[in-house]
Image (cartoon, rainbow, N blue to C red; front, side, top):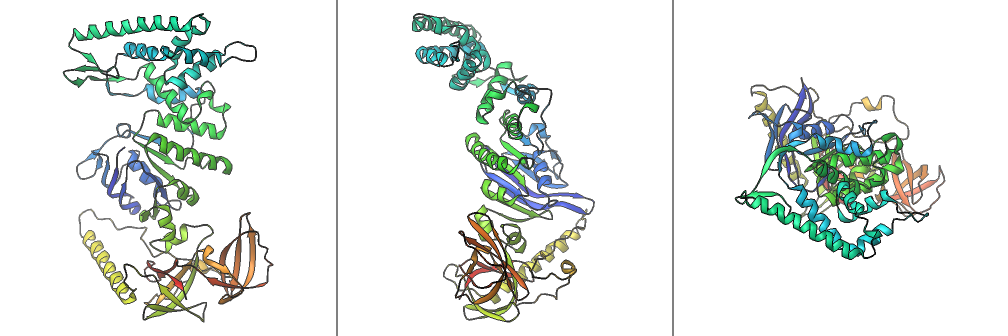
Length: 551
């Protein structure tokens, strides 16, 4: 399966940038989720890769093929990119059976394809099946109903699933009525000889024309497989439909109409229709959003299974972080059209690049606490909650102690470089100033009593030494010997765990407690910040400074 590469891909409408200079590499056979809030550019990115939306500028490659290049004027249409697109709604034809819904797109395909001798290919398939006549007869006799009669429909489906053949071939095999023969093996051997003779005759006829048949019964001349622009035959279409119906487990619904199926079954049909042409990449735009919670969970497992079984590259759009975390091999988190982080799910959760990523990923949400401090030796002295003092010990990387001044210098140099690039771009022909400008994420400090107009409140300009301490709920430990004194303001049990709200002064924190513990609202509670993965962010830039622990 191909690699997908986006280079400086931009999509804008006037001064509004839906996607801004997106650079992304999606490895083959990966499952990548595009995650972010509504309107961040997820679906736009997906549609640009698929060819359903034209980028303003940039370059897109799928495998070895450049499908879009603004500078060279390349823009390969969607139907030529060999990708599948699964939409949010099922988009099934209500007047067509499941079979016809899946086959509809296949019947319209016309492209350069190998030329096969399907008569010889079918004859070989039947021969192989007849050589196991004993197993075949047992299979047929195993499809008898309560009345002792053989269920033909069940037999045909069994033959299709067992031997991977089309319905046409299955009907030919059943019509031989081997189960009615006194000596089925003798009958089968006789039929094998007839089919082998037919194959030999076909091969001899081609040989006279300088053509041979390969192992798959494709025509070969002068060592080269013959091809032509053609549509799929009924046999090929049926094989494709039966193949994907087995994969998504809907073989028993082929004669039903969409209205006769549940939401999950309809979604399976939509997936099967998308997989039938064997796309190298499968794009999915929030395909589970219309399903109930239980069905969504089931379909997540199905998508994971399909990804493994098909070996295709999956690119999946969602605003549901749980979906992204459970399905993806990598998460591409976007905000305001700009890539924020592209990493494995646990790396995004445990090592967020900035305040936005830390806030967006995680349920319950992370606790943000304003802090001031300075470095002394290899530690940071922090003041938080107004007057609470504590020592923050930064992690050591590659045996090197953390140096805050060095980090500030790197940050400032990056800001200068970014400003220089923006200045250079503004001088270029065709430059358009971005209306929806990127800003440092406005993190929220939870309080017991929110001030009116809190969101619009202007903070004083951040300086060096202004930090944001970020603590995941699972790292707030309720203990009798804790350093901090709080009050229980709320408790929400969810079975295996409880979400606890704790106030300390005017601030409100969220903790997660595992096990069936009962808490009394209004009671005093001591707590600590535990673990080595507390995060310290720079308030001025919003960037992650370091991980560490409280001593």
